[in-house]
Amino acid sequence: CCSFEWSPGPLILCSYTIRLQTTTCAILGQGNPCADRVIFGMTEVHPLGVLAQAVRILKEGGVVAYPTDTIYGLGADIFNVEAVERVFWAKCRQVGEGLPVLISTLADLEFLTDKIPPVLYSFAERFWPGPLTLVLSRHYMVPMIVTGGQNTVAVRLPRHPVPLGIICGLF
Image (cartoon, rainbow, N blue to C red; front, side, top):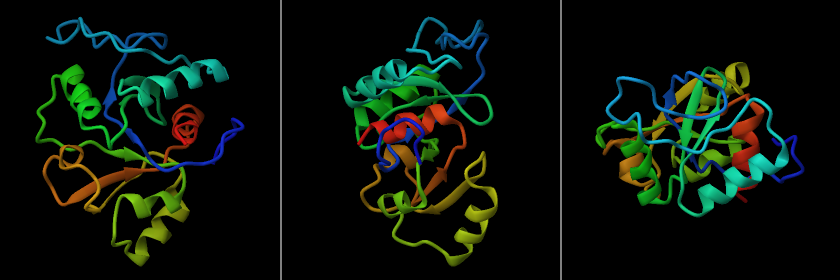
């Protein structure tokens, strides 16, 4: 999982992609009614100190911005409902819309779903790590706010080293 001297740990990043004007700070953009809501930003240069700071912020119930396989995401501990609410607040996003959850290994799925269809392994082997998001039956422990009140959860195993390093650093 990790190229950062951390042992792998399950999931714990809620993400929603956002478009950024800069790679150094996640400012939500001009014209957005939430443009003044500045979130801790990650840069493409990711020394361990920056990843450790992101992990600390998440453990304290904060929200971080980080690069992903496609653009940028906002992350929070999915089991901290107040932190997930902060993601919705920062995005001016309706709470009824679910958020994809990032994992660091296939084994992390046991924390998110109680039904892993056999075909998932074929998709995962071919497309993960990477930008593919799979929708699975929600495990009862996953807070409903994460899924937008649905009984399904969207899951992704990223290829990008920054979210993987953050996920692995949480445990």
